Image (tube, rainbow, N blue to C red; front, side):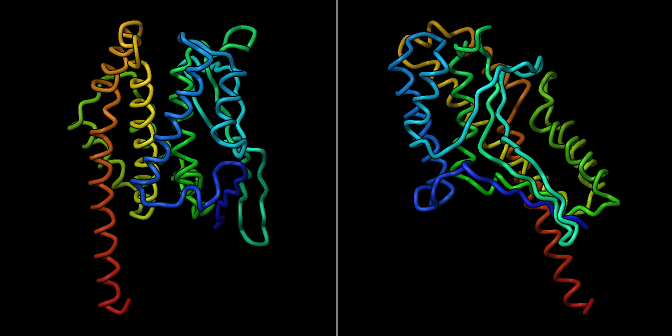
Amino acid sequence: MFKIITKTVNTTLPLYFIKGSTKQRNQMASNMSKKLYNEVKQHSNSTSCTIENFTNSLNKILNNKINFNIFPNDDPITSAKIKFNITGHKIDFSNNRFNIFVDGYNMYLPLDTEQKIIKNKYTAFHEVRHMFDHIFNPKTCIYRLNNMDGVNGEYLETKRAEIFDMFVYNLDQPVYMQKFKKTIIQKMNELPDRISIDILQDIRNHLKSEINAYNDEIKFMTKGLGIIKNFSEIKTNKLFLNKFAKFKSKLKFANNLLGEKIKTCRLKHKKSLNSGV
């Protein structure tokens, strides 16, 4: 059995700065997002902004404590994305550990051909909000499925990706929640409870961040005269969220399902103790 260890640097701020309840840390991330918007606004009064101004603004509010890179997005499916900057990995056979090394973040944004201009700064605000959510919730930087054995590991990872994508990434068709719930429950029942719990916790973190990111993106597009200039894009985003993504409904379902799985595990554990197994 290999244990996956994620070793991160330059991905979060000192503990004294991010310490607080879940609600407080979410508010800190939101405040940081507002600060970035106000900084960038000083240099840009249009939809676009320069990479230089955006980078300088982001470094300023983070006191140059977080490492990040900006690359052109060449993914035909998504308009932008953010990933951990994985710099390498190492297998420690003596301790059965698979170490993943992360140094900051990579953002893939819509850039001009000369790669000097971010064509849609609101898309950039969206991706940076994901980064802020990670910064103020560093536990989400840890790969959760860290105890998969060599025999079942590939199968479990395939199932994890399939379920995760249904919640977060498969967004090209309208979602009908009753059908969605039925399919997810069937797939979850094929997995051990501990794996289902890990998957649902990971999904919950990602859905919360998606909700935050879209809220910020729409909010910043409506600032000032933006609601007129960006009316079409705002309308498109809201239609997408209500019909195709349904992140809020999915989050409620994931929380309920997680609660049920945890309750089942506790009951099984209690029975095993009482039976002396």
